[in-house]
Length: 226
Image (tube, rainbow, N blue to C red; front, side, top):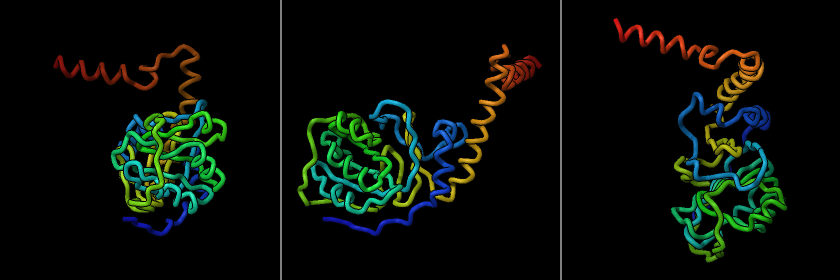
């Protein structure tokens, strides 16, 4: 059975530009939800960061017909998020899928399962995050599939229209209304580290003095002796 829903509204490009300035790991300093399992890793070498609107797919087992359906719906700025319903054997994305997604303007593919044709992914420069690689490919069996439904990817609930931020450290999903505050806080933290903390470290100061770790531990030790 197929479940086909409408594409979600796309997130304001200005918001995505702001989100792209933030590192997922910086947001990880103050946020604890929305981060996918670290087993989902970037497959391409080199640092890159993407931000876009989630277009969700649930593809069951070997049947990847719904993935090909999604390729005809993708818009510039979308991120294709693939829930593999627990399948870890069949690759849902190879060179052809990656090239078609990039040609549609898709900025990245996130797969809760394996991909394949990694050499072609590199050649086409299509950012893919997956649980690894497999030589067993999916087939268009036309039996099951869901498009733009709520899915689970990397242990995170993802709805079509959510924001996706990913780099080689991992993948983060959040609601569009959360972008502005999270990005602003993260960028401020990144700026402070580069402009304040790093120069002090270069000058010879120690990290636990700069961030008051030593002072806090000393306070705790005094309280323990009281």
